[in-house]
Length: 513
Image 1 (cartoon, rainbow, N blue to C red):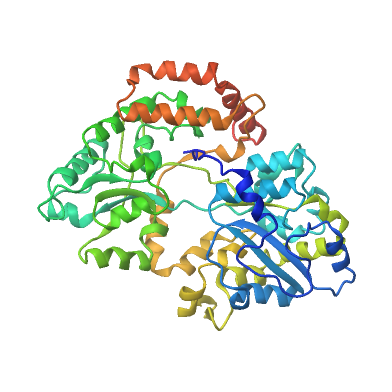
Image 2: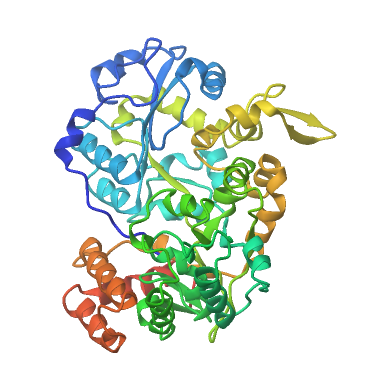
């Protein structure tokens, strides 16, 4: 399901952040953080091939250690004669607002994260370095690692403008309190009727045995909480575009969507759903689940099955047992969700101003190539050999230091990682959860391929659609008015333009005939 846009942070409040390095201080002889990468300071810095170049990287995130404690930074700096400085902002909306302010000021980081809309906008304005001339020469290793098909996701008007990080694999599924099922003598639900009955029992039959009616069947974050329910009706969440039976389908026009909304409306009307569902953010839903407030949640194994999280919910209730639950069978299918397996997990761009600093640009290419080759990719995946891992009989075996110090390494995986190797190695205790999530049936979303066309405002349409879908599921608007909702989407918000763009992009990429 597409992410709903939240209100933008006022740009003026971010202006003070322009050029301020977040997460790491400067070191060495590089340019000051508040000077543009194409300015005089940068030009003077790259006077000789042996010069140590400061490379600033802008990215959404948090949790980096101080530069002096950042072992991955130190290893990359020493290997490539560079000085990496990470500019981190937590929260993608806040991060993108800062990047837009910095772009307007001509002060972009040397490598920075973008979304598809910003990529297209910045490229059209001539702010980005066209990578096309470099891919088969100076970026050959990185291109091979990312694959050409993934690189196409970073194209604008036929040219390549983004480093596309290898796509993530699917992590999510329903999770259910097995101990609650046992307490109430219930079996694992396998279809929509059984799922409803279990949710009702979890709400009304005191599954935790505390003598209070203080539990719900479901919790989650907005409409994503019901992804497998949409899947049971053979569709994706509202607003998604996906492939089905060799055709491109927009979920709003799928007959299964209003039927799924009717099922969800029943759950909500009978108080089987956490009342905070539509306002839950971050870890709020998981916190509710861990505190014993709900018995079913749709979440990634990364949010529940890691040992640290198991310890959290076992501290609240030692008998609690969260287990994965497959998607329920429904009238039109059995899909856990619609997953965009071709979506770059992160897109990075370089400012056009780097053309004036060829030696520095080469050092950036060296970095991207190195972390895409065996030695460098192993470094950014597993850390320092002998400290974070050892090689035993040809296999990577992680040490205790990896669990303590390796939670930020993924930020340095700029071009990605081979997930089939990485995940079971990094999370050996969670291997069964990983395999389970990978085997669940999913519809193929193509949302990452679609750029909102001219004449269509995605933000306005998404805002209206979210408001109306919420009215439908909370009984504030009858589902008999669903056709009228679609007509407003078409007439007022020109939604057909977006639908047509989805069809066009699918054909351009060879996803359909």
